[in-house]
Length: 179
Image: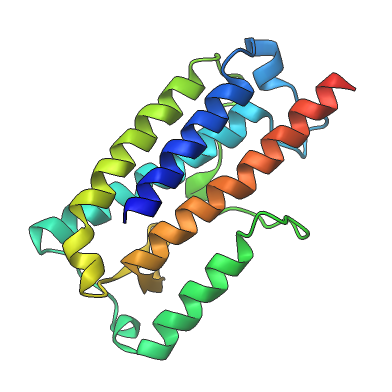
């Protein structure tokens, strides 16, 4: 758990250091209409992370309702490992996101980085609060699809790995602007 919180803090700092001083034009620069801008990448991460908060709330209240598939251990492990592998930072293969996690705008102000940092702080708080359930191997479902199930601990690992993937993507966009 401490490692997860540390990684979230480090990622917040990397996003601030890399993009915090960019103006709106730089944050919204897109090489083409098929690619995301830095701001869209950040907005996507905010959307993904916040989409887990209601699930965490349900866990805390004891009201999380899981699909039947969540009772099949090898399915839970396989789906979790598959999702984790798909978000690895190497980014050799592009993957399309679920509509619920699409960026909300195409033109953002530079404050999107501050919003991201606040969401990271909220996520860190949730990680701490979820520790007892992680110890019990709590299974959850993906906010994008109730039939995609994995453990809470795997979900947090997926979130951090996903952020690393998109940090690399945003840095590529920044490098494109510089050249």
